Length: 146
Image (tube, rainbow, N blue to C red; front, side):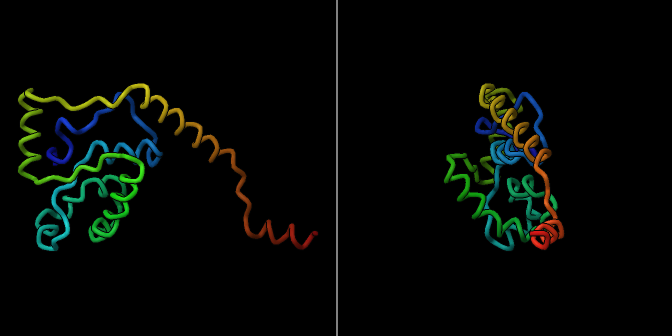
């Protein structure tokens, strides 16, 4: 599993983030790698963990759903300029060994962006808490009273 998360092209972060926030999903892509995917035999042999990015984004999805979600995740990353890394397991093993032996280092995510993303997550969370949920039954009662 470490080969899916180590390499000089992977990011590490200074602070934790809110689960299932914008930062959370971005981090799953920036700190994970997919191996070769698409072949039923290959996917089965990897236990579908070759879809590591999708697995970390939605850990409770069924294994076959990772395959279906991958093109959507790739397209979204491409649209927003987020690097989506997918490489051969042997190349990833080499990158992991480079990290373990100190001949390479993982990247630090730029601190100023990390702070901005975490601040934005806090604002979004507060907006969610302050948003009044109107039940359908309440809407129906308001319509009757008018």
